Image (cartoon, rainbow, N blue to C red):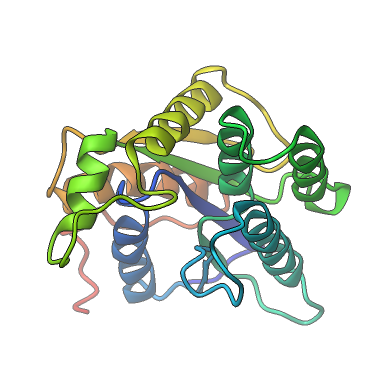
Amino acid sequence: MKLARSISIEFAGMPKSGKTTVMDVISHYLRREGLPVAEFHGGGRYAPLGKSDLGRLNLYLACDAVRYCLSTHAEGSAPRIHLLDRGLVDRMLFTRALLSMGKVSPAHAESIGRLVEIPDLRDEIDLCFVFTTSPRASLAREAVNKLTSHQGRVMNDHFLVGLRNTALRFVSDHERTVCAQRLVAVDTEASDGRVAETALQVFTQISAVLLEQGVRLPPPGNDQSGS
């Protein structure tokens, strides 16, 4: 299948809410259907700087997301479906959550907002899924197969409550930012462990965007690709 233009789809929201897992399922399906897919992973786990200063980490991750989005328009590059695990919208969510809890200054938050909303990135993200779950579920998922349940700088009740409230408010207000043409809320608290079910809901939204570009995908499980 060929794309008329590149399409960027972001998976944003709370840690351990299913973003990365569902994106992996979607990526696998799209590749098996013959579509060109590129992935961006914008989490802080592998950022080459200390995690104690959340402001610096936030700025680094924002710059990394901007760099990737700009690179999708490299001269001569073929159109692809770009799947972003924590991209531009995610930086906006985290920045607002950090600001509400006094972990970054208003000047920092304003600078991040200006960075991810520069004119060159206008309408860059075609579709963004904002994942949420309860702080209890997020912490429980993190603790699986771990040797400790001690809470961390981000993975703690206080921060997760703030991030959840920020994400829900962001979507419920139907806020239109220059970073996302469409926002879709995905709450995985009630569907814990049912990854395929959540992935199918996400796929329905993605297939509609692709159909607008002339790409028609078979329903998952009913395709005849043989792959």
